[in-house]
Image 1: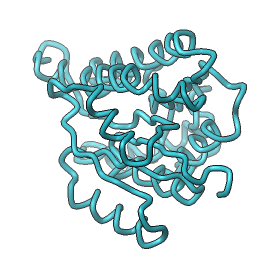
Image 2: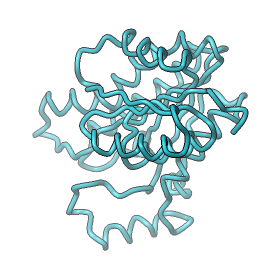
Image 3: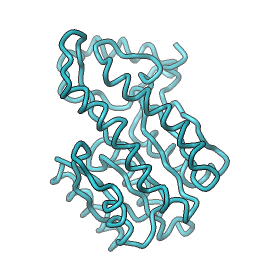
Image 4: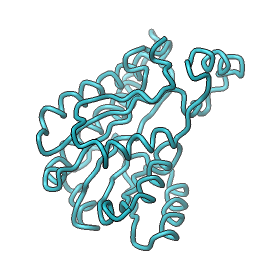
Length: 248
């Protein structure tokens, strides 16, 4: 913990699911944590209280609609004012739902591209000067379907594919001061509110994974912590944390 004490991580979509586990993991490693949320206010406050009970004055909340017309520079200045620095940005916030060809609306396009690609880019652009001051890093949470499109999810798959190229591009643009990498989760948590994902379908997916089991949010969080703290010569890479599913 000592080497990370007073370092600061900003996690988008931090209130729930993989985001909340990354917050716990980085906090346990000594980081101060900025928890971004939009609609999950109760979950964000509960998580902040949990972390504050373990270490006082170590967390703060930022409520933000990533699809709004935001002044990104002001947002970063506000975040930096808490502890005077920003060391790690984790672009985790995401929207995910099917979009069937012939029925896709511009609102769906703007929503999926906005949260999965546009917001990560402008967050990264705004935070880059702060990260350069401390040789920080950016970690983008991508998806194995960025390279293997998911049926009935063309817009989501396109957005995540764009996030891969953004990772590669910013790794060049921001070097040598800032490293930029991505994590591509496989079967970690089942999608919410998708009743069509039956037990039979889930079993079929598990059979396609060489390790024959589902991963956990801790797998993603531990990989993110590794990239942030123990990988000074890794830049521009996408690490698949999928039990080998991308091999099939």
